[in-house]
Length: 167
Image (cartoon, rainbow, N blue to C red; front, side, top):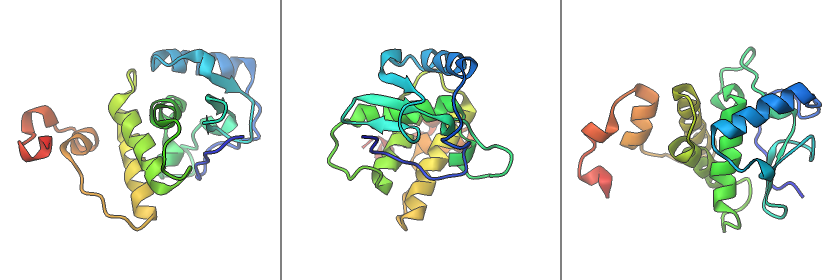
């Protein structure tokens, strides 16, 4: 059973992934150095990670809507979405956080931005902004750390990080 669902104006989850789409998505999975055997295409009702199956189910909503929306979640590339599911949700399989809760989704986007190899600067920025939007939607104030600022504003946080930030 698929347990995680992101809202947003991405491409319809009912869009059937073609062989060409799947080949492109497999290249994106390889770019983030994820285990391709953990991804199943055109399975489930929407893109998401299933704790029960230990699989990322990939549907048409893996593709962005970068025409009609300016929300970071809608604009994230397929690569960023795949990283969110794999390096965010799969990395925290069996978590005690309620599935789909704001903090579960915040953590998935934040960890993907921080940990996934092969992401573009734009991918990392949209993942951080998505994490912040998750908190904002829940009414939770998150204080930006140097990693977040460096990704969004282009600051080299390694050089500007203080001792207090390293705690």
